[in-house]
Length: 283
Image (cartoon, rainbow, N blue to C red; front, side, top):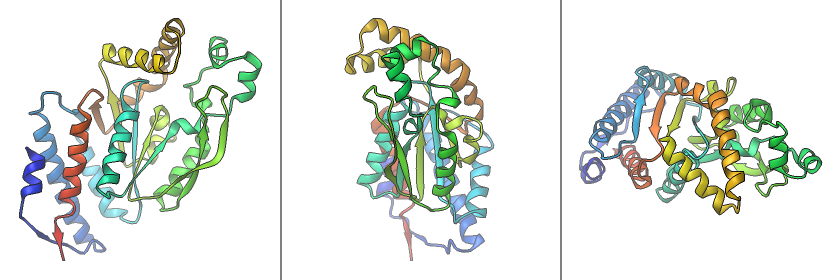
């Protein structure tokens, strides 16, 4: 309903001069109004998207828009394994591309350390994990490189991200994936809320999920990857333990907690709404 109202609205707003503080203050107020509309509409949904919004988020983000207009907006998205965070972010990227919305997507999974030598030593990733390798710990990521790249993106500098191969070899290929410093950069992965990284984001999102749905999705994904059920359940036990240690504590640091089981089409509608709302200005 909200989306259709916006699309069918004939209201036009004279575009303010965003190079001035007054113009940016108007933009911040306008976006606040639109975000509150989204939250109000969300409460009417059968499966709402928004679980919780930090009461300080809107004012904090507004100050950021007013005081640092030159910087790109970094959005950090985290959540447990099989919470739906990657699927959500890819849907957002797909929709933004269709709408020509200036948004880039970066997966933190590509910042895993190269562990190819360890995998060769132990014979497989599963053997390495069973011998105590903690893949979700901060030490298992190239966090210094990730931090450097996020700062560059925030300042409008394109980067070449590494690529971690998902073929079981544990190989990380440096300078492999071109990432553009677009106006909005969505950065997704469990390490998004690790100390030293989360402070770099303008918006911090935690994707929550019902554990029963999460386990169902996790096992279905393992089956698609030709992983036998016994090993998949063993890895499930690992990721649940790791989540308690590394991921769940970051929920309290999030600006917004969303429901990973919400409709992907609904996500797209919200992006479309914001695109329509921010393109209603006339010169």
